[in-house]
Image (tube, rainbow, N blue to C red):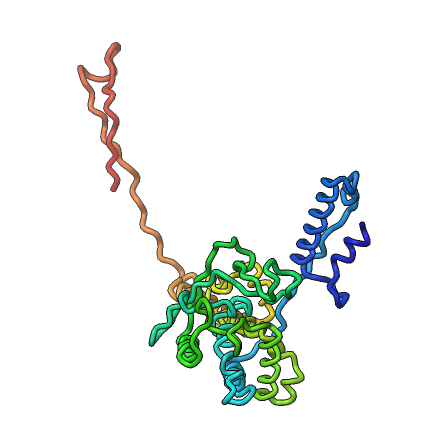
Amino acid sequence: MRGVLQALRLKQDGTVAAAETQRRKRTTLVNSVRYAIELGRLRADPLAHVSWRITETVQQVDPCVVVNPAQARSLLCAVSYIGGYERARGRRLVGLFAGMYYAGLRPAEAVAVTLPDCDLPAAGYGTAVLHATRPSVGKKWTDSGRNHDLRGLKSRPPSDTRVVPLPPELVRLWRESVDTFGTADGGRLFFNEKGGIVGSSAYDRAWHEARELALPPDLVASPLVARPYDLRHSALSTWLNAGVDPTEVAERAGNSVEVLMTRYAKCLYGRQALANRRIDALLDEYGRKTVHLLAVNPVAHGISCPARPRVRRCQREPAPYRGKEPGRRGEMRSATAPRSVCG
């Protein structure tokens, strides 16, 4: 069992898998063992006495995969010419890739976007309500026997939704896609030439062709947006570097703030320089105030202070007495408190 647990740490290429992947595999193994005990195939839990700890790994986004806005626009333009402009094979996918870059959608989320869930105004920002994904997992791993099953959002309850703002450029591209190609069954915005769901192999192949058209040879050989998913990485990195609050970025992307800042820490260009300028400005402001106080302080310039005026002591009025002359036996002084008159 220790050998089995050790194998669960690794991916098929021999590298260590992410911590969440290790937890999911171990949970599946534990459930299988418990089911075997329930059926009587095992007498005891063989994992009970095995000490095993998940190897925590931090998978940060490589800054080399992130594209700037100019490169992203060139790539989207190149997609439209894939397969010839007449066949429109690439033009069907322009809006799909644009959703990954401008809205930070995951590929499985972009494939499942439907027109009834979108607000595409003629001007300004639009919105898209995400509630489903269409991941490509293969026929062996779906309940329906198809390559794509309709599932909920990643790491969320099945009925949960996420509202994503759509920039005007993305709204324009999606409106053009609807006007040119229409929608598929259920109002899906993106589909293949037969009306089916766009498979991951199809848009991966199209993306590699677009990179060769839009990028110079040295960048084609580099890891710059080597996968369509890197468009999402580029979107989130752009938002963070633009100064958008991390809570807002995490809400749009469907991540937690902790995961967001951990994965994209290396992609925050210029944030340290910005922080240094703010600190310097604050120190300079208080420095000027201190110099001003020293300038008006005579002691700091060696000027002797004038003698402080003497303050007269408090004078007390004699308390009034009642009865006969004071000092005689058996007579009491009045309990009235003396009043102070300060000069």
